[in-house]
Image (cartoon, rainbow, N blue to C red; front, side, top):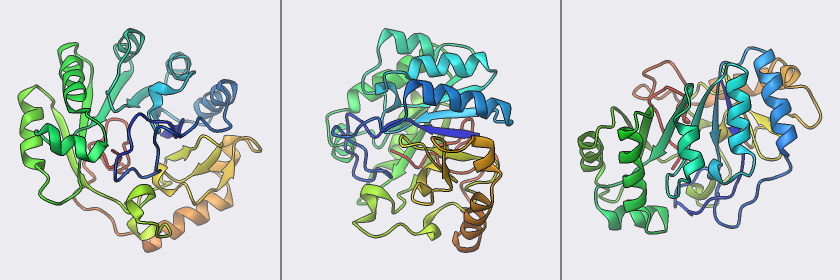
Length: 270
């Protein structure tokens, strides 16, 4: 599977965001044509699933077209959205066969949820989760436990009441805004990065997963995707992660990596 980490632009400034996305972020150097080329190459080298992530991927000007193109290639598409603002066109996209949805939720109490996201988003995100369920859109919801008395269990129960069947809790990982200014440490990764998966950032850099973006193994602006994925630099990065990372025993129901893999149960993002 492949993460298309489309953008650093987001309406929110979540306190734990792994790549420090926010309102001042941008879409990087990858054009719509660049992403389309990546999808063609991904399908050709055996990728079966992609996830659009960011930032907030629905803010990317070419995201809808990229979903359509991925579906035309036979790829499954998951869209990891904060569900703060969903247009009519995006609801149509979410409802296409082969598309699933993922989002984050923090508390059954609005003030606690809003304190984490930095904006009054609780009501809108909750309403759009409910709307997705009512429309039969496959959706999974991640709860990131930030500590400090967060009502994680209550949030899970509130999601169950409105019909969400796939819910997972994960801890904050010390990357991006959650790092407190510390250098990234591969020991904080799940340990399965790069194993049949990779991420491409808005600058075209390829890494073993979305949380290991500092471990660039090549750039699709300069190399073919297949050459990067099968190259020695990727193999070395993956081996390094295996050596130092501590596997998350409770975060692997589908033998998949934790950072928002399509159809898996883990959701560490935001």
